[in-house]
Image (cartoon, rainbow, N blue to C red; front, side, top):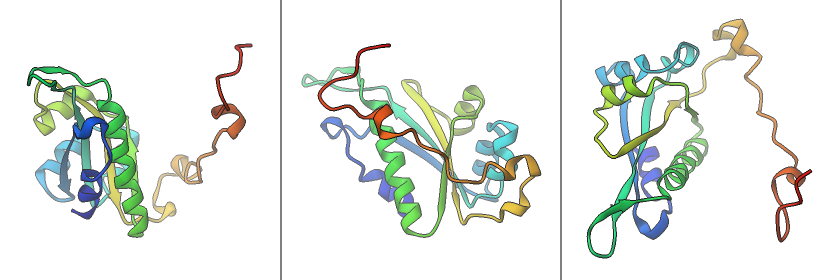
Length: 163
């Protein structure tokens, strides 16, 4: 619940808080349903997580008059909730891994996704397992992901001219 609470406190545009989380612990029917919607590669290791969390965002929010209008920031804000959850997991000595490899229709059915919501990711969280327990093809991927140099992603004043 501490991870979910961290997501709850994430910043959001106009404090709309469009993120929605459905979570289940390993051994529960909800966990099995979420896991079944993952692609086979993700299932290899996600089945061993302590918790699976489906993240979705509500696509609309009320305007000043109370009418539901498109919330163009819902994906961005849900990403902030994911980041808050991930940082909290790290602070607690846990691993949290977001996955986009899932069948959207199967996951929507598994979590009872309401109309007007978009699934964004599934997060597996828990204590990091031993790399040796993974199939050989996945072991090589268990290294820090490389990052682009700052000169490729951050620009002072404006984007550089296209080349």
